[in-house]
Length: 257
Image (cartoon, rainbow, N blue to C red):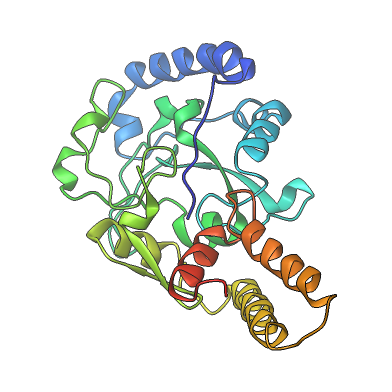
C-alpha cells in the first residue's frame, strides 16, 4: 500500500463536480425515504470524477501505481479505475451483510475521496465494502458527519504511514493492526494472484546475491558491476517504483551488502 499526498483538486471537480454535488443533495432531500430503501438510485457522472484531468493527476501523484497493491497499472483506461474510497452508490459492512443505501453520494466528486486503483483491488475485491469499527456511526447522508466514523480499510490519503499497519513477510503482506488486517483481507492483498510481486521479489534476491558473489571476485571492473546492482536496489525502494513498500521491508531484513 502507498501513502498518497495530494495538492489542489483539479478544476473539473471544483467546477462541474461542485455543481453536480449540489444537485445530488437536492435530489436526495426531495425523496429521502426512496433513496434510503434503495427503490430509487442516484446517478453519477463518470465524465466528472473520471475526467482525463482527474485521472492524469492521480496517475502523476501515484506514479501510475494502484494505491492499494502498488502494481503499475497497465493502460488503456479500462485497467485504471478511479476508486471512490467511500463508495458512492451504496456501502456494505461485510460481504455477508445487506448494503446501506444510498452510498456516500455527496463525496462522489470529492478530491479527497478519489484514488487510482487497479481492477483487481477495486472491482474484484473492495467494490462497495466499507466496514466501520462501529457501523452505528455511519454517515447515512450529507447531513451526517464522516468525522465520527472509524473505517477499517486504510485510506491511502490519510494514513500517516502504512508501515504502522502492514508489514511484509517476503512478498506477502500481513496486517499488524485491526485496520491493517481488514485492508489486507478485504482487498485481497495477500492473494496468490499478485504474482508480479513474487517476480519482483525474485529480482531483488538475484541482485543481492549477485553483489555477494561479485564482492568475492578480484577484478578492477567488478566495482562498477556491484555499483550498478546496488543502484537498482536503491531505486526499487523509491515511492515511484512498483511494490516499493515490499522492497523496503525486504531490504530492511536483508540489507544491501
